[in-house]
Image (tube, rainbow, N blue to C red):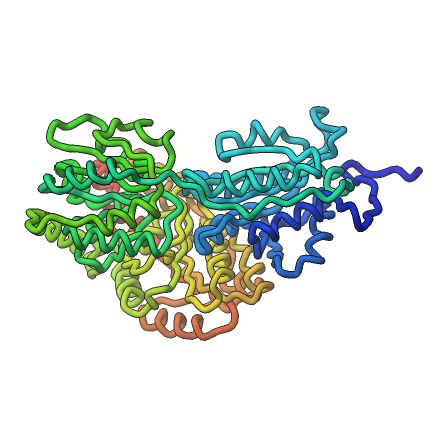
Length: 572
């Protein structure tokens, strides 16, 4: 008998009446409507790759890093409104891929990660690349399982899809032992495709919300969480207009409400408008819809933390675990957003409302907060953002990773439609490029722009090669200041002038972009940017537009000198 290397199961012969685990698995992906998978291939799931050859309706996107693959899956799920699938190999593949699963967890995004695993007979022996995925992914996933029996794959996948999309959406992880994938079994019956299951809004809860809204003089609607779509956002707009309500969005959910709408009050994100934070604290009613009321959105848990006698909190969320978890609302409602917003949109408002001046004041404050002027630390970027705000199509998708550069699109761009913002609430670096590739794969007709900093770009910038292979041209606006800017900002705040570990020696980004099959442009002025951007959107290749930013400019509103002055130390 020939010896086999670890994780290389013997091949089996399949008959018409039997199928191996890999083919049963791919059949189930078909049944549940999967049209694309993202992967970095591994020998641990070669049988699945083989089965996909006979499933041409499922496209395979081969990525250059497992973190890029899972981030692409996460963004693809957001853009399509369906659970997305990624495959990685055991051990190092799974640990690399966990970065995108953490994004999916905190963003409440339905992603199913399949991990090619060691053979069943080697489990619990610390075999080659073995990891206990149940323990590893428990804090990040809604459910973690190992598929030990090919005959049970239909059951497991049905549960995986239902779990990922129902209640608060989120990621599911399934380990696939390599020998299970080639084991034959009688072809099991297949369940029906998954269905989204959400709790409904009761008549009693609807009436209670309406009664409290009718009495409120300074109400604020706060929206966020996963599972939204364009229809839900449209219902929200109808509801807000009918009741004359100011709407603010949770951290990096800016596209849930038209930012140019007169009812928009802004985003409760990092560095939120102080006037908005003050107004939320002074409001007499907070109607929180879908949001978990997480740390960033609540300004470090300072909002709603102390019960105020003149403020009421209504919290509507599809997951009972989030209701009363941190805050004690006057009214806790377990309901999904689709039915909630549809019924609120049809809820008749009182004829006389005393909220107009309140709503107009919040909108005026938002417009002042997002004004693009030469008073900003980088007037050139202010000009570029003003041009983009005016000229980008309303359906253009903007993505970003993490860094101070993200303040430009997060604060200063006006998101007009749902599904135009892809930004990780987990604050993950490296998200921008993979998310942009996924957005373009989801809809090749839309303009997709990734904002990146030099530090964030080098985390996953190699996925430009994936964009080239898939022929999906994206535009990357790369702000290069030669540092990890956000960390440097905090360094200057707390340890002014004592700089270490935050400076970067970067490659030639123009050459790097071209080596990945993209075009590149280095621009110094707004006019140069406009020309380069026009060429980029007309090109059939991706383009990296690099803008070198003075290292003195630490953020759109701060410089190193101003930060040190605030800390009581002169620059030098």
